[in-house]
Image (cartoon, rainbow, N blue to C red; front, side):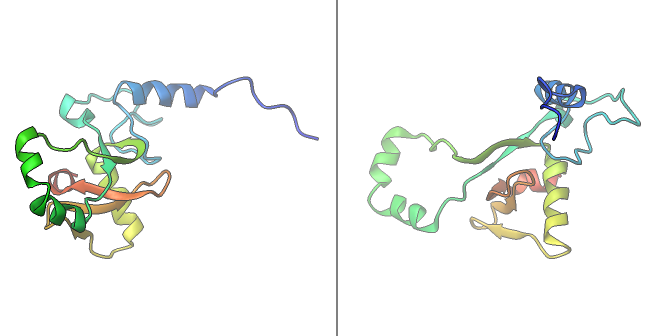
Length: 139
């Protein structure tokens, strides 16, 4: 026999959800930017609150096709395609970099898309995608 499930989120889950909504905490379980039990009153700048999402890697065949037949269409629209994300989770750049370095276990990061992006996996759901090289260097 087990007691019934609680009727909602725990206090900790509620606080973490509100911190996420305010940009103080990301989805990384070891978020180093947000407040902690030891230091609950932190001062965070807007630049530190910035969060990124992991996007799908652009396939090499897609970019080759764009140069051949679809180039004329692309000139007409002059718009970059909207990025497709691998999952709904958001991360501070330092958090995703530290999580990926831990996952790589000391190995070198995988640079893709002609050096413009770094391959990462989501620490929450393990979906694989890329983040920009600038975001990686910031972290």
